[in-house]
Image (cartoon, rainbow, N blue to C red):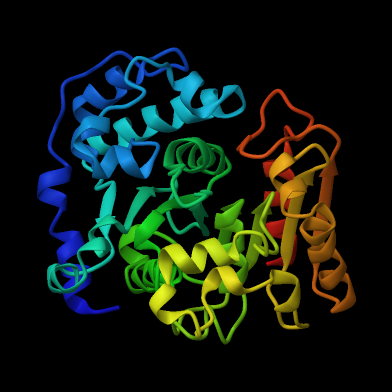
Amino acid sequence: MKPSACLASLALAAMLALPAMAQEPITPQTTMREIRQNPAVQASGLYTDIHTWERDLAWFKNTHNNETLEEVVGSGSAASCAAGLNLLIQNYESGTQITYKLYSPEEIAAQPSRDHAELYYFPADPPNARYAVVLSGNALYYSGELRGGVSTAWELHEQGYAVFVLRYRIGTEAGNNAPMDDLGRAIQFITANAETFGVQPEDYALLGYSSGGQIAGVFGDAEKGWQKYNVPKPGALLLAYPINNFWLAKPAYTALLDVDDWMQKHYYDYTLSKLIAPDYPPVFLWYGKSDRILKLFGFDQQGPALQSALESDGVPHEEKVYEDAGHGIGIGLGTDAEGWLNAAVAFWKKVT
């Protein structure tokens, strides 16, 4: 972690921790316009757009403004997301810095897309807790900081953990292994500032949804992940409907992201089950039999193949397969996957 990046992030405190006027609590029926106009949400720096084109194209700004939070994130995550947003507002108004840039101004000037790599901090109470980094799914265009990130942060906070929601580069900015670099930089930054954040640097968890789960899984490989970035090995990988093998999308990913570097291996080229070795981090894994996205990529090549590899190499793991749990349901309240996060946390505790 470069000192300049650390100082640049910490210097945001004065700007992002100004007092805000009290607002009505956010509920699942609060509109996105009301959330985005909340002074504390605005000043905190939280990214609330849903798709990359909302960020990049002016005429798509504030898409979904007239929709409720529940309509945007889904009924399975709405209550937890609302609670997480209210927690974020409370933290901000008490003087906590929420947003941390991962790269220094000089690094961003050299590669402007790095400006979109951010951490959103949800401290534990009391401090000196273990922490988790949450990676939402992306599908190259969808940004899930609200549905996957904030909702999960609330649930883990309630169980005594500190949480960092990672906004990593997606879409056309994800070339040259940018998401892996963003995750590596995030763990470097948290480790270097563990005392400031009130977290234990060891035995952290990476909680990844869908393609975020694939990124977390690649990071679990020493050569390609945690050891390459010179950070502690994850204590556990908590993977929600992860993509094990992107085989169907690999040609498109290469053409969109790395056509000038197609001879090299990139994060989406790796099949997680082929990276499993006896020293791989412990894994909690869940998915649903009705998951259409996993079926599109070949159901047997996804969760079942990953579980089989974990079993063969003797890696501590736990697998849960639900009858009717679709893709992108996040916390999954109101589905038969409800409660999966409690099971994942229990696994994390057991293996660390």
